[in-house]
Image (cartoon, rainbow, N blue to C red):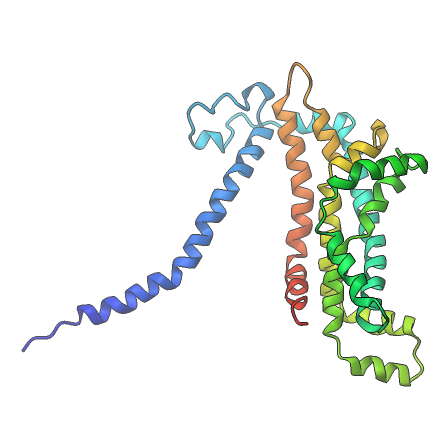
Amino acid sequence: MKTTNAPASSAPRRLSVLRHMPLVTAVVMGVLFALPLLWVLAGSLRPGDKVLAGLDRVSWHSLVPTDATLHNYVTLFQGDFGRAVLNSIGVAAATVLLGLVLSAMAAFALSVFRFRGRGLVFAVILLSFMIPFDAIAIPLSDIFRDWGLQNTYAGLILPGIGNGLAIFLLRQFFLAIPRELVEAARMDGLSWWGVFTKIYVPLSRPALIGAGLTLFTFQWQSYMWPLLVGTEPDKQLGPIALGTLQGQMVVDYGQVFAAAVVLTVIPLLVLLRLQRYFTQSIAGSGLK
């Protein structure tokens, strides 16, 4: 009697195909998400009057410019856009530094100290980052105007340093640090400030970087608040400068696409460089 091994050999083949399906799906989804970005990049390298010229027939020429030029970038930075980008970098950096100090100290207090109302305070913090900032931006801008903080870097920075999500991430990470370390340090005479700076901060590098990325992302993509507070040209941030590139009668899409590429590449490089720390911080936030 003859036997066939076809079913036995096809089973491992099917298992191999199923095993690679998640990878294939991820690659396809990545390509689909990358196509608009590649189109914007290609448009930024074309003359402004040719950016939208080939939309009637989509081909590989839509993603690979044959007449590439850096004229859009050169013209863009000859104006006020370069200063706006520097303003965005400075405001984002100050927001991250000040916000990390404030968020880390708040998270330390909520994770280490036992006091009445701690749960209520934490609930208010959770509620704070669930409310859209745009809902309170207009009345808050009136307050800042009364305080004389309009068209100042302080006015642009202050609302971003108190971020409830950053405090939440750090608190959850701090809860995973063994309590025995704190008790041993206190028995050795270390102050609470010493416990915070010498134990919690060094052990929380991934969480601090993850919280810093959260603060950076929220500040970098902010539009409504800089539009309300930074009305003077020398205090404008990158997203506002991008919006002003669209004239009332004529729009130079080459410069608009170039500005969009610049404002996308900067946070993209930061996120790619620190991605693994952000993933670790998110994973650590679920320990307790």
